[in-house]
Structures are given as structure tokens and as C-alpha cells.
Amino acid sequence: MWKIILLMGAPGAGKGTQARLLQERLNLPQISTGDIFRALRDARTPLADEVRAMMEAGQLVSDDLTIRVVRERTGRDDCKHGYILDGFPRTPAQAAMLEKLAVEQGKRIQAILLDVPRELLEKRMTGRRNCPVCGEIYNIYFRPAKIDNVCDLHPGTQLNHRADDNPETVQARLATYEEQTHPLLEYYQASNILRVVEGAREPEAIYRDIEDMITSER
Ligand code: AMP
Image: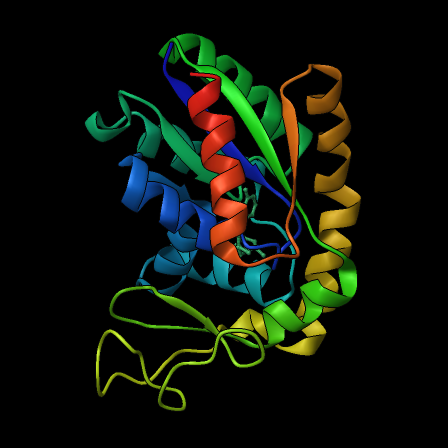
């Protein structure tokens, strides 16, 4: 049966990095609700203001809108044979919707938690930079670009620093995670579909564990 792979974990846990590797190497589409909302925020639509306000405050976009975008995106053809969700679900209502969606789509959910200590999360976020062209993720502390603030893969392209990766918003995002998303882990644990990966390691080592989990339980 085809799978929906959930990459769970606090902001800064490395979900985006791992989702990109999985997409490249296992050829599964990666759906990041954060990326979808960043695109919505930057578009000139009435929704942009609502999305921007929530993101800037480190709070969650409404369940209603989030559920609509996930339903639409996962209904596309490229998701037929399974997909990776990065940053969804984040609330009980989203988890309940996903359960229904999995049944409708005839897919099985597999949840993987990237477990990272809090001190590291903060540095991962405040040090994070990414290429606006290819999305490659760097970190000024842990994975600096070869030339300061320029993408290794796109010479001449300056790296971005996410507006919500400033120290103040980072604290708000971590609090939101603790309150609204962390409780979901118990739910997935109780359903026996949660596996935990030690996330305070090199991306390649983490990737190997995740790939093993996915391919050994196909
Ligand atoms: P991320 O890139 O996953 O850290 O998401 C960035 C921001 O997008 C979050 O701080 C939220 O404001 C919003 N967001 C992303 N995913 C969700 C979701 N599943 N539910 C509600 N808001 C979300």
C-alpha cells in the first residue's frame, strides 16, 4: 500500500532538509505547508495579509485554510504513489482530517519524529539560510556556504534569511509547537505508527535511518 510519510518535529528539527533528500532520492513529492504559505504570503491576494500576520507572529494559519491547501495539493497526480508531508499536521483537527484523507486516498500513514534538543533548535533556526533559486538549506554555524552568504550551487545568488527565523519569532514558534503540535506525538505513538530518529546528527546519518524505516516497512 502506498504511504503518506509525516516528518514530525519542532521547527528547526531538520524536516525540510530531510524532505528534500527524500524527494531527490526516493522520488516522492515533498509537500511543505510552510513553503505553500510562504508563496501565498508573497502573492498579491486577499489571503496574503492573513497568512503574513500569522507567520510573523509565529502562530499557526487557520486549520480551515491549511486543510484546504493540503487536500488540493495531495489530490494532484504526482501524489498518487505516496508523498511526504513536512510541517503537517500541526493540530488535532489537521490530524483528524489527514486520517480521513488517507482512507479516501487508500494510503497508510507513517510518522517519523526528528528528535532534537531545544538549545540546538534555536541555533538551527537563527543560523538558517536558504537559496532563493534552488531552496538548498545552509546554516552559518553548522553548514556554511563556501563563499559567505552565496549559494554553492548558484554562484552569485545571495542566500535568504527567513523573516520568521529571528530570535523573537523563533521563541513564539517553539511555544506554539509545544502547545499545539507536540501533543500529536502521543496520539501517533498510541496508534503505533510513530518512529523516532535522533535528529542531532549529520543530515546524511539521519537520512540513512529514515530511508531504512521507509523502505523496510513498504
Ligand atoms: P514552517 O516552514 O513549517 O516552519 O512553517 C512556517 C509557518 O507557516 C508556521 O510558523 C505557520 O505560521 C505556517 N504553517 C506551516 N504549516 C502549518 C500548518 N500545518 N498549520 C498551520 N500553520 C502552518
